[in-house]
Image 1 (tube, one colour):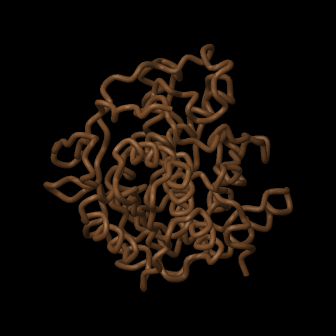
Image 2 (spheres, rainbow, N blue to C red):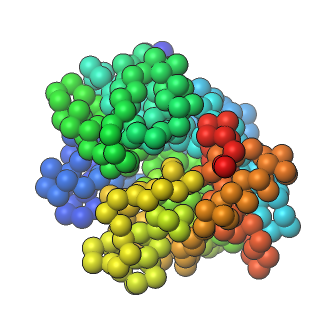
Length: 374
């Protein structure tokens, strides 16, 4: 397939209004150092009756994706939606090619990187985003290095290595790995495939909601629960529900229920305090504490203000779960036939007993990646 140009969408800083061409490899706002949003202009609607016969992947929603005519794909998306109770359904995103929902955003980053032709791709991850970026870079023929914190599941680093990428273990936690990747990203010729700072990732994760909308015949549940660390799935869901509402394809936005592990719950603390961000909020840790939900153990997410605003605008809330609840939820789902990693069971632990409204939870990582919690 012939190369296609980088689209006309521009990077936009939500804090100070700075802009940059999306063809740049500048990974953050040069004014404040914060993450980019993406100004796509007005996107056309996805018509439900136009989807029949389209490609059976997330690229079927081409009208609302910022990249067209992709050359990089592993058939990601279109994961099953399965009822668990009368009111709670699960979307099986662990059935993605790399066994986690992160494929939704990673394919967008790899496609963008392919068009920019960098000398190298760098990423940071506690595991799933790194394995996804490694796989899609392999598909795109791009060299890739993934910085992971010590203590990352050996199965995940093995998967990164198997895809031909180089895992670099960084002493310390998730923040230390991110700092190492950002330093590498500043080297000329590098593309930072950041699932936090690069907004193309969010436009990939929004397809999660478009798939629910299509599966339910053009409607959405009363609530959508998502595990939240850096908030990439939640912010993608917020993008999708806003687009669907603006196009008149839904008549209301579902409440976004953000779930964090009680051990590392800075956003839940800020939400309860009525704060717009994390600054000055009691109970916000400087470092992540140990938790079975390692994938959402993020003490200071860069998009904290956006996450809090998105939950409030949807009429949603934050819930936290204990380590005991996580263990029990993983075993409960396994007894129902779903073997899900410990981060991916957090939403079931939080809302599995809900009976007053319909809700969809993501089962967003395969249990084979981490094993059964001790």
